[in-house]
Image (cartoon, rainbow, N blue to C red):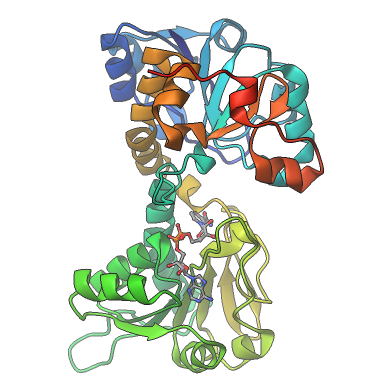
Length: 374
Ligand SMILES: NC(=O)c1ccc[n+]([C@@H]2O[C@H](COP(=O)([O-])OP(=O)(O)OC[C@H]3O[C@@H](n4cnc5c(N)ncnc54)[C@H](O)[C@@H]3O)[C@@H](O)[C@H]2O)c1
């Protein structure tokens, strides 16, 4: 199959959908890999590295026009809508439930659009979202430690303390993928860490793997109020799949925090879990409410494209190989997790939540793309 890799043109996006190592794997399986000029530069992968892996470098028009399978990181943005076309398989993050113009552009083009974020295993894991949550969680603890420093508007507190001086207190609301990874880094810095979650099973699991090094408490409105007041750094990491984040932290709770404390709302991409949260960018990441520094960057992994690109390719490559080796219909038939990634196929919306979100018609995938059984 001819696999194209497009350069991201969204502002502040430096990731690329395939590493040179991934390109070599695909070439060795007999596929042709065509990389857009300069696509990997933001992630420190110059064109020569792809050429050495057996890929070819081409201008933007050739990549989009000749690919059978096109790999991207972010959803197509308006200047790219004209490049969407019938028969092309597009594999990328889409998030189209919140983007009606793109949904309509995908439907009108007749493209086959498979979204990373809705690839979902039978046990409800989201394998292509998880690597970005790992990274965002780790960055959240680092950003929190940074903004607690006095010159950056913080209380002037070293999270780890030193011998004879107590460490800082980190509160993590939501102990999933983001929360666990934030805890790992906060513990590594020497902080005292508390995680609140609503799932007993998840807390049992965390208790087991973290061997009692964090306090695990049941999340309730009262517990959140008490814990937020005592914390130096609060990290919001809740998720209710498919829904906006619940507003668990009220304006009053923020007002009761210590002056110069930090609130890092990782759940901002789902609307944020505090009443005071609003999305920020890497170029202007923080703002202050009632003396509390708010860090609410909606695309945190974008800050570390070298790591994010490698982590993303590690997760996506097996699915890319499946589509390239078997063709889309066979690959979807073989793997129900990948089939759940299909959002728009041949002019029809095949992901129910997307159709519902825009009040458009839903068609079951099987009716649109006869899935050959293997
Ligand atoms: N800002 C970014 O750049 C960025 C990057 C990656 C992920 N995220 C976001 O981070 C959030 C967390 O993602 P994740 O992968 O860790 O999800 P996850 O599903 O692995 O974990 C979410 C956890 O929240 C818990 N939870 C749900 N309701 C709760 C409540 N009321 N109180 C306490 N805990 C509760 C769940 O039990 C679960 O353990 C999501 O909104 C995700 O979109 C943001």
